[in-house]
Image (cartoon, rainbow, N blue to C red):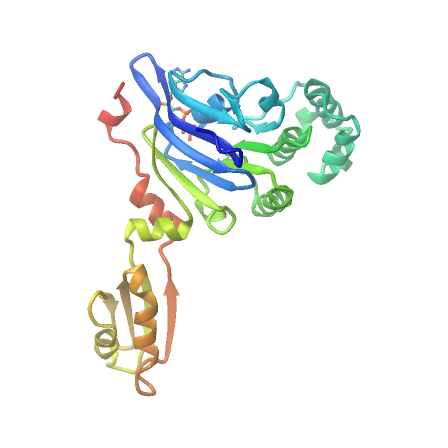
Length: 312
Ligand SMILES: Nc1ncnc2c1ncn2[C@@H]1O[C@H](COP(=O)(O)OP(=O)(O)OP(=O)(O)O)[C@@H](O)[C@H]1O
């Protein structure tokens, strides 16, 4: 089942806790070098999936291969960097000592400690006790820990929760650099706005199942959500503009000088042609508003129904 170019390959992967199914028949291939976002409501099964990829919990059924190793063996695990949802470091140690500890555990070169402290912007704070670090500093130290040993696969469980916008940006800049080096990234998040322009594909879990996995454009098409086109028209011209677009367009709202049309994604270009080729003055200005990741997520990934939560 494994394609050597897939960093992760899952077939029917399932995890049950007693009668409760946390991950339910999940099949997915993640090519090497891909940046995949993993979305899902609280309890959707994202962390459980990561734990199975790390070999921290055994699947109840199905198959998984990580970096070409069936079952995610020890060799594969050494090539995986993991940033857990709640990072904790032992109390008294400094940032440098904590990272050096993990470097020894992972068998990573000692020189990487200073290098990675620099990458995550903690060089100046390296001698301070971790217990004095802010949440953002701890997250950055956690990322440095995940990057030790030059991993080929990064698993990041809600890594940006609680980070301010500047830190988030810095975080994604580091990830962009990792991706440029061919590292595969699987990142779970609830912060949808930060993902839509940064990831290659988006996987959505709901009640333990994978309900969608595609590019944002593919998800937009699959969801069949309309593109909104906001058109500014001369006084009283709203209906004329709507009529130009014709069949398939829905008038979502209108007043004397503007009209908002809902148009299927596939009909967008034709609608824009129709709107822009009218006589002068029919359309003064327009904005195209594609369905956002929030819209797409609301379509696919709403909370699981109670009966889905209890299926075994
Ligand atoms: N050890 C366990 N024993 C029993 N149930 C568990 C165990 N670990 C997880 N679960 C359940 O499995 C489901 C999936 O949990 P998981 O932590 O994978 O969700 P998640 O998608 O990561 O959620 P969140 O976004 O809140 O972090 C939840 O209903 C959780 O209560």
